[in-house]
Length: 442
Image (cartoon, rainbow, N blue to C red; front, side, top):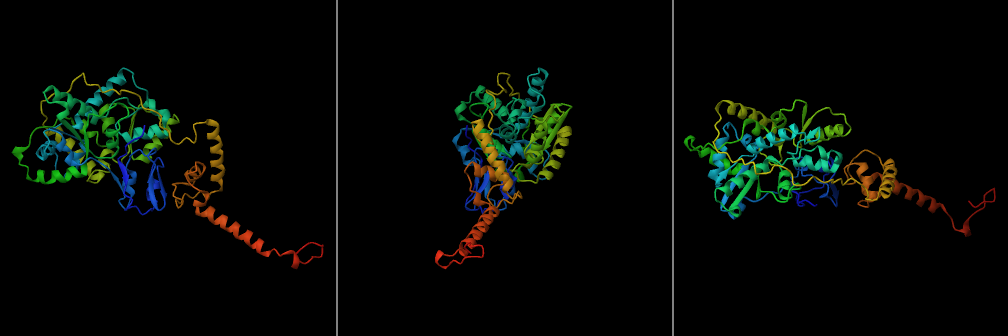
């Protein structure tokens, strides 16, 4: 299955600086002809390249706001990260009301979906329908990382749909029961990251998402700021339905805290996640639940957010404290037991690091790779356009690069050619050769 990736490259802005190739966790980027190239079969849409690109040549492609006009009944499902993007705002109802003022007919929170997924996950654990240690399936970038780099851990991923998809299903089911035709309903997710865009457009564990479009949180923020500024206190509707725990899913540790699993680990940042998964794969991690989020500080650090993730983390604490004492939720039950939270099919192994389908050919290529790697400088300078010397050796063996692309190997070849030229220049034609003392040609 090929994905429609959200992360794209603006060739005009790319200067071929190689910053991105070293930060990609799946080595999905190469620099060729002074421009970065994203290898689609390796990209997990984690957004690391978006963060590190000083030229702003990488971006996450979302749907245009104008897409709302395609539907008669417009529904917003905001990720709880949205609540942390505004200064001095503690009441989620203000932001939810502003979304309705913006043009949405209804607003349902992804936080409510998180509450439901939490309870369902607890049930699966009680019924022993999951393999320990469990890995959260909430972050699609991590799910794809496991598929590509840690396929033996695929059975450990929690087989439950994401909170985004859960609330979208409940929302559509509820509105259809009210008499609104499903085709008239447009459900739009307000996303903090690109991985969830890809997950919506090309879901892998079910056929079609109930979400019709994904809007960038940055773009929605610009619409909401002036609305919130003019919003009167008496205009604020009680629209919140998610709990403080559900809202807390946006921050690292939020899901694991809500799960109430005692023996757990919460890890954020793609490099840290890889370290934990390596330990898990080697049976060196004695836990029951792993909450792994690709972005530092969880979804609060997503590449489509506005606020600094550490500032947002502080705001999240204040919001949760506010909800504990002053929070108001509306009395509307949209949950329906007929709505499935299970996957329709299992995740597939998408290991792209293998050298060949034929095991013997793969071993032969591995031997060539190792032999070539030993001749390389092993300093991972990136000037060849590959992230490391080892990945360059793989590129050469797989015929995606030439040995001369390494400046050090090129210099060595030029040096040998120069030596051969000198030796050739010293040779004389037979007519002017002289005999040495031993009777040999000089």
